[in-house]
Length: 237
Image (cartoon, rainbow, N blue to C red; front, side, top):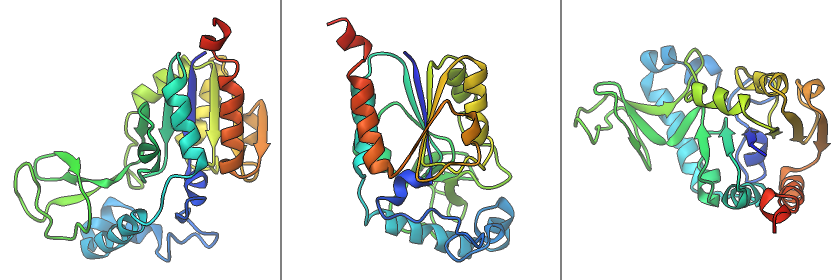
């Protein structure tokens, strides 16, 4: 059985990371237009860098929770195809040990040089004067984050995985941000069973065969235990 999982801000909220967009529409006190668009970066790179430097610093203060650990276990033990697609820019899935992982919205701990196009790991503050480790040009490095108006990464790979999935699981997502919000419909159309795990029903709950409501740190480990107990490897043992 091939599994595709989509994770969103809800899974990392239990580690202490803000879910970014608040009820008033602000992203940690900022308008989206001021910190999360290419236009914002061109207009005021200092403000954008300050915003992401603060998020990068906060990320170093938190740890993966039980949901991240459980998905990493599933990744390690599941014998068939499996893919974790995350909308999150944090590194908590990686730190928990997940390997079959795609960051469709980029990664907070990476930089992208607009001068040479190179992408690279980055820790600590970036700022306007950051120097690219590849071409050594200063002042052309931006966070390797997919901003509004930009195309998410690895969409062809994600679409191919969805088309071959037998099970699609959405964890901690609002179901309101496209293209990720449409993944469940693609998976259903291609014959996959669908499961949502969330604190509350998402905007797309009607498209799921099953919805489990509660904290990811409790429900995800229980689901992983359940699915591993009937894995192909154990069935053939």
